[in-house]
Image (cartoon, rainbow, N blue to C red):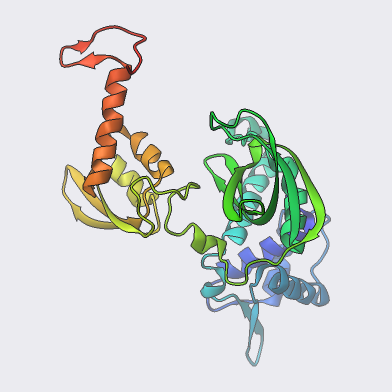
Length: 322
């Protein structure tokens, strides 16, 4: 559930944003607030409260609600540049819309199905405090890698949280290894704040850190440290899926016909990217680079060996790669 005060801020941002570049007068904001589901206590929105909310929104979200004064009325608006790329506000707006749907339409609650995120949310308060105050954390962590069968204690400096495919991840600086590492929250057994403060890297931008990657992994599978051109050829309805929801922000349509579409990307290929392509089977083909195409061929060959498929078809079930 979203905190009631944060809910008010998000409602105000959304209402003024939806009014467009011409803005909205305060009297109309008041009328909308009287009917809003976020107005739990059915209290009127007075001018002093509104301006307090404006200041809080600027401080917490970096979004300025500007005022365009005319002879008759003052119109409030938000510039698009303040909202573009603000993933936190976008997430909260979407979360509030989902919450409103479930709370306001209780008779259809069982007909709205959401994806379950396994675990990790219990650590949010500790992580949030550490991110705000730049406090080192001590965590007990168990990787899924076969060579780390037990939990180990790690001292970290948290940098950001990221959600990917129903799992929460924490990007942090590992103090002992003096390197950035990514920790899945569902693999943490204990997380404790320490009394040690740290200096957050002045020029570090979490969004830019992941900008060249798909997903959470940042280790290249073809030994490149810089983004490269990747060409994908897609078939059937999968092409339409990519048009409506691009794989990566660099996606660009460069060729199309009735049977296929060709997309270009600029990114660093990682394990997550490879797994995503594999999950779509013969709906997608890697055209270039050749090295990535060969990696896909190798993965496809291993699948054939796993199912023991030859040119004559399936020979037997339960086979494994030799």
